[in-house]
Image 1: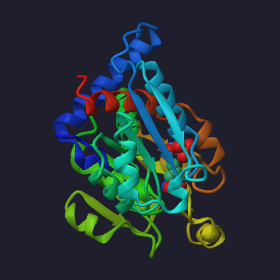
Image 2: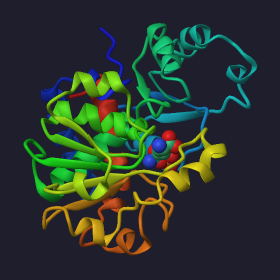
Image 3: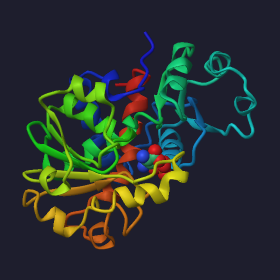
Image 4: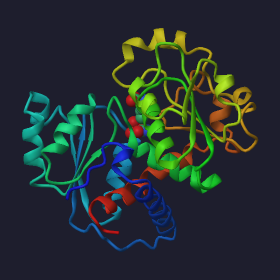
Amino acid sequence: MIRHFLTLQDLSPGELKSLIKQAIKLKAEHKRSSDPTTPLKNAVLGMVFEKSSTRTRVSFEAGISQLGGSAIFLSPKDTQLGRGEPVEDSARVLSRMVDIIMIRTFAHDIIERFAAYSQVPVINALTDSFHPCQLLADIQTFVEHRGDPQGKSVCWIGDGNNMCHSYINAARQCDFELRIACPEGFEPDADLIAANKGRVHVFRQPEEAVRGCDWVATDVWASMGQEDEQALRANKFASFQVNHELMALANNNAIFMHCLPAHRGEEVSAELMEDTAVSVVWDEAENRLHAQKALMLFLTNRY
Ligand code: CP
Ligand code: NVA
């Protein structure tokens, strides 16, 4: 059976735990420069990007090469995808030629339709609704810095967006409490909250949400595709900045994460971003590489 990774829910909690372990192991091997084994020798990763990317593109491209394979970058501008070839047709054609496909796109149903017609594993590299690869890296980063997130309190400050939705999924998969602070009208999906009642709580005040938390995360106020709303959102989210004052209300040892790119002075203060005693954003970014290598190995049954 082909396994896809469209949301975190495509892994069982046990599989997720072992994937994170594998990612930590791959990272150690990579640091020792002792990863000449090439379990994905000759494998080809197709990378479809309908939105911009730095981390996702580079981590997947570097990751597949380190595992012995190679990548093909596919932009809709230069492919028939951008000229209206149906997703279902593109999926059937591409998956006859490559071994794994990752897609960054807009509506989540695009990737679901693609996966339904693909003969090879499909990875969600961000949709308007979810960003599960980022959560693999975030969970790995928490495990490395603070241990198992089970039973911890995690705080999401800001927009109820794709990242927030993936944090809700992570709360369920890793068994932690998620306290979300967002302005009225910017809540995460109501069905997703309802499905996680009891562990996910929505607050209006960041100061209230952050109390007792061990892990605080945020993201930009206007996501890709929402550029026109930047000014309106900057106004609505003005009191939702994560900074040292807010972190002081969290637990003593709380750490800060941001999927990046960050807008200093908006959702995060420049001082907090740079304070490596609290901010683990660079480890978090690096872990995209290791976590996605583990993911590609998992989806191709290499461990
Ligand atoms: N965090 C993240 O996905 O970054 P990119 O948009 O640069 O890929
Ligand atoms: N919420 C952001 C995440 C970027 C990695 C976006 O979708 O643009």
